[in-house]
Image (cartoon, rainbow, N blue to C red):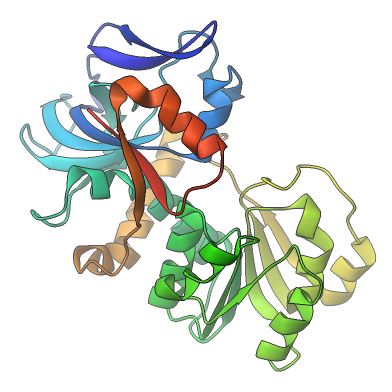
Length: 323
């Protein structure tokens, strides 16, 4: 089969052996694969949790048809149209753990649209609901809201009953579109005054929950924008992994500062994350209320070009490979 593999000079298309599912595995004939920011690091030769390095097949999510299942798999059968989070997804075939495979909810949903959903749904349900402990009526700020997972986070917050949702983007055109995905207020964290805008919108109290994909550059301002007893969930560090931190402000506001990542989670933990997500969100997914826009699609043999498009940071929504 063909796959996008990390080589000495970047990502290249190679013929590799077709994977074989173990007892808990589901072999998927991939029709589309979604790009994620973590793919850029893997493509550059870095490690991402247990994956990475020369010879690694890139990719974290896909959609396609089930070709075979392992002996311990129930409820999934050959021929099913599915989407899944799975390492090595930039390939014609991939094996996904049974607990990370979900049915495509609508026969009319394209493989391309389905491939955008698995990572965003599981990541942001975990951040907003499980780690963030969102309660109906609370206020939320999503830092880095114009990314695919950011757009999903705002929709999940609304679906779970948030009373007020703000999103940030430093790009004016993307910021103008955040309302389409649930934002009651869009702010530019690159400009002074955004914290004051959040405080004004929340009656001076600040937001109950911040889901942060930016980190270092906004860490202290996040705490200024947070309510007393607020929660900040650190999901990503696109704006820097190290920076100043106002410990006194953290203590004064009694903020819960929570770090999350999938890199250190066990198979069982990820299965539970997906189970909880489906319990809360599946009716909204089936109804089409949780969705992501597709910025561009590329064929698998242009995977390096697709990654370059993501690296240029000019997209809105998801970039998808077709197989």
